[in-house]
Length: 133
Ligand code: CA
Image (cartoon, protein in one colour):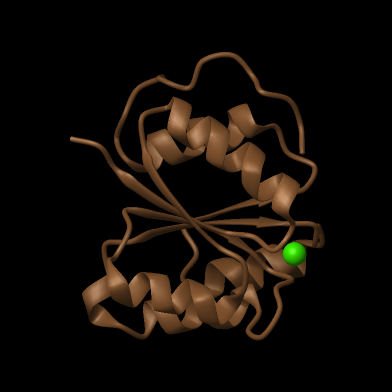
C-alpha cells in the first residue's frame, strides 16, 4: 500500500524536487505552501509523514509541528523538519516540539528519502540521488 507524504514548503523548486523523489519512491504526495494550508491538508486527510520547512508564510513550521502534536488523532504522523536553520538550538526546539527528525539545508533529496523510508519502516527504495537542494 502506498504511503502518503505531505510536503510543507514555500519555495516551489524545493517542493518540486522533494515531490519528485517522494513520488519516485512510490509515495502519494501533496504539497502545502504555507503553515495554514499545511493544517488544512492535515485535517482533510492525515498523511503518514510530513516534510516540514520552518520558515513559512502565515504560520511557521514550529507552530505547525506544535499544532500537529496537540492533536491526538495525529499521534502516528511522523514529522521530518527540513530547515535552513542550522543551530543546535533550532534542532532541539523542533525535536522538543515533537518532530521525529531534523535535516539542515542544503540536504540531498536522497538523504530525505532514506529518512522518510526509515520512518515508514521501509528498506531502500529511494534510487539514485536527484541532487542537492
Ligand atoms: Ca521556507
